[in-house]
Length: 213
Image (cartoon, rainbow, N blue to C red):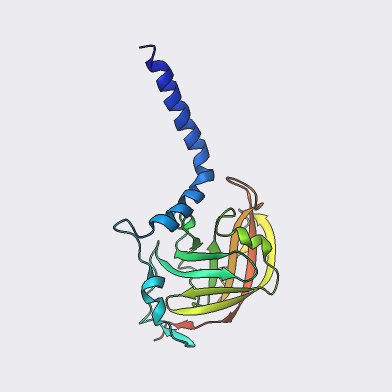
């Protein structure tokens, strides 16, 4: 009986430590999962970028009737930012699943969208993994987003730090193509922080999605 008490105490201690550490280590677990076990489990979301990316053709428009719109969890592209180490897969959806595997796209029928929709494209990434390189961006740097339906370029226009509750940091009523990327701040912070680092970019090139076709 007495031998069981230390064992039980040890097990409870390990469980408590794991629970406390999970918010910190989960991004790294997701990163390792992406590199070593991607697509190894049945029922995974689609990789539209891998399956259709080779069929991309230079075009000024994409017909809505032919567009394979991503579902939550689908990888539909990749993102790179010149002059930084940002080079990551791009997923549709902004749940923990997407954030742990790459850069996440906020989806909202009321205003946010994917590249080419003439809306605000809102992308999020962890500050200690996929979006750590945002600390190195400068005004004028180019952002490249390659999707399964076309390639896009945006030019960085501004950066700022704001509280995560500040709704003025984005505008979903805009009807022009624009990009916002954000991550937790400070960049060396571990776990939850109340501030976010926002990077704003203007549209340079890429096919527009024509919803009349």
